[in-house]
Length: 206
Image (tube, rainbow, N blue to C red; front, side, top):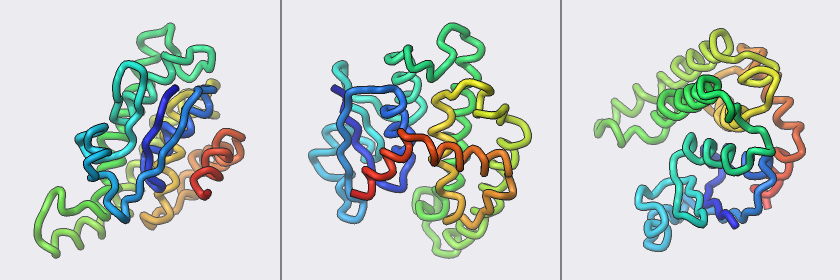
């Protein structure tokens, strides 16, 4: 059985949804950032990075969202969560998810993780002020150049969709109007209506 360690409001939601969409046998354990549980000795023994998500498998622990999503797509091929039979198409999936991880997520993190990059309070304020611009630009690029429709990669629902949905949940808090990107707004609504997504979102409220 797989075990996911997650915290609410984080990118771990993408893996959580994908586990459900894949029909995986799994458990999920919530960590509390308020009590700094991600830096507890018990959790650092699982993930020395002190971050979520972490996915415990029978072969060891996986970290980093793109890696976990690719693993789940390959482990549960019947769910058809990625074009596993086409190396180029699969690389496109990886490219999209890598952009979310390396660029979009980092832009968002400047709002509350400024201490990773600077030490002056004035620098933190500048970083926060840039969030609407940088996040808005990222989602505009996705809408215009990367999103194929009706799902991210076209007709087939893939591991890109839970990841895009997850980062889309951050837009309101980042002062970005999702309706400025109507394709992504429609995607968000359709994702919210999926039974697996509703199940995961309800579980996080428990």
